[in-house]
Figure 1 (spheres, helix red, strand yellow):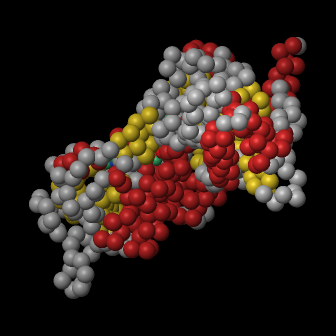
Figure 2 (spheres, helix red, strand yellow):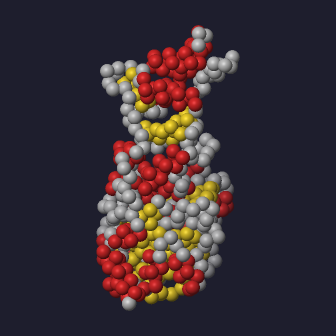
Figure 3 (tube, helix red, strand yellow):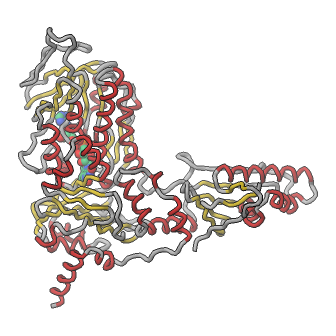
Length: 516
Length: 103
Ligand SMILES: Cc1cc2nc3c(=O)[nH]c(=O)nc-3n(C[C@H](O)[C@H](O)[C@H](O)COP(=O)(O)OP(=O)(O)OC[C@H]3O[C@@H](n4cnc5c(N)ncnc54)[C@H](O)[C@@H]3O)c2cc1C
């Protein structure tokens, strides 16, 4: 394989047509997408409208049904699609959300159809535009794959591993792959898109063709997941709200929490999470005991009523990691999408949505430029911009803003020296953090508790969390109102559950049965 | 022009001086002793002149060089507060003081 060779004829193509035809004035354009997870499948579907040929290279085999698969270890764990991602997915593949719902996925409004015990207290049921779609990752992928790849415009090579790039630091000309363990072969491409996920080797592949280093930032989370599926009791299976028990605020303690979401086929998926020292166990007893030890027993109570289906699955690679491909001088003809570029702590439930938003952006960029030099110039920056919000949110988890200090010093009567008056505003990224004073703590607590009951603040909060608006959408006059008015009382656990009639009725029955 | 504390500001006296929260920017500020003193005078008097007058009387006495310096410093501080949207300039006839406090 030699750099810059347009087409070497070394491709083993299956049904793919391989080269330029002398009858055509322009060579056939070919895009190759590496990795057939959600980001890769969506990118391939988008590219199918712009390249003559699109090849999707997937190292794994897709399961025949809506099941987890080896190449996607996270597919054993809860995957909810937040509103921003659901909208993007429907814009890319119209009708997908309806198809998911028709196949048993559940839509839950946030916080209207959810029982959420945040660090600040229980949320009231408030109607907002924010929501999530809950189903197994297997079902989501299957529905999306059918709609994205079903038309036959994308050639899918399963059991095929991407090994590296071909070309040089100025231009990627193709990719080296190995099909079902066969010797490497080279596939010519006008555009190679890396979508191989968290474990992508793109920086190494780029180094292999002489391109420069890729800046990488990792922010550890220390978070471990443990997940199990349950067959839910029939009457409660689909009537359940989305349940989220967040860690409390106790300092110096591991942050431990749980979620329980309804998924298709009358099942629930329970994920327990804990940071270092408080990791959820994966043995039967330990898993149950962990759920029982949380700030509220509701998840443990529901687990006790349901039938476990299969093993408890662990997951630990939850680091926030971003590779700044957009800052490097990338060779033309190469782009990176999905987790391969920006992978955030899964607790935020953003990865799939960012993949869909990225694919939408890819579609816009392709519509504007087609596949060619003008596309390559700004493509990676455009894709990175779609992940920016999620990345920022993930790494600023505590959301604390640096306190600005305003200082005034004027001439002291006793002293001879007159000091310059200073009105300085320390702030921004370089300002030293200091402990918040009592006033700041009170304001933060008041605001955090106000969003539990203020429809406007909850809408802004969940709008940001679900990627349907940014934080400038927060209604600032509502902030002033809640800070100067009388605070709403916090709900007790019983009151919070009482907002969900089916759940409350079930708990009453359970209590009655237990007390005889 | 009169001065008034912005309606977007919630503020409180604390042991360390005055602490402010700007509800529109989400920024917190804390004022040192002197800054707090200026702030209180703006809140109570709502005009530049009495603020300048009281501060230079207290700090400079009859030292006119010091007095000029103080006026410059106070102007600078108030200017920074205006820039950050913490204090507003309003036409003299408008009510000059509006206090928001935590209930
Ligand atoms: C525990 C956990 C929970 C999560 N929960 C949520 C959630 O609730 N909501 C949400 O939106 N996101 C969630 N995410 C994130 C989500 O899984 C990803 O963001 C999403 O899968 C999109 O990733 P991707 O397509 O970029 O990569 P992946 O989904 O990881 O896909 C990469 C694909 O590339 C293939 N591959 C890898 N290497 C090669 C190679 N060399 N050659 C060929 N193929 C290769 C793999 O087999 C795989 O199919 C979660 C993640 C984790 C880890």
